[in-house]
Length: 129
Image 1 (tube, rainbow, N blue to C red):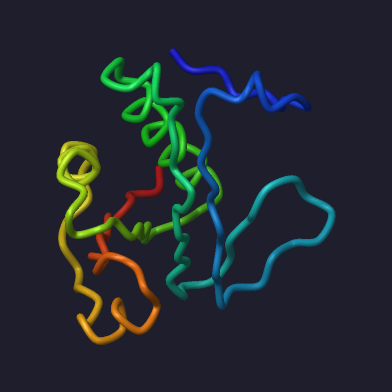
Image 2: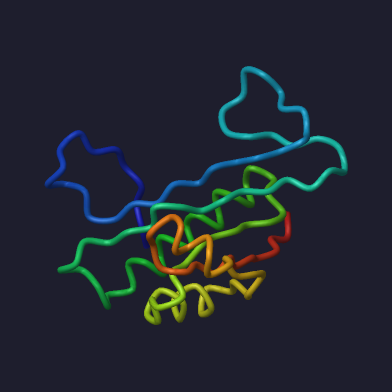
């Protein structure tokens, strides 16, 4: 089980992720979270997924992804995306285990221009209950 809580101190931060929403739907003002209406697809991008090094290989990242998927489903998200560095085998395995599939890869020229490793874009379809 994972509990989400806010921390005001850096030494209390053990794991984190950010769920950014992009939607063409109308949101109802005054509600907490994101409420979806209409038939348009709602997409979210998962970013800045990180776990403190001393807690690697304990299942925390997988639980963090599961909690992020649950939040996304509750918000009415139908498509979830994440980027992963092409040379980051442990992260690629984690995302694939969590249900993400290959969508596309960043052109090599773009990665060189931005001075970073080439990234893959992964996708997951979420069913809304």
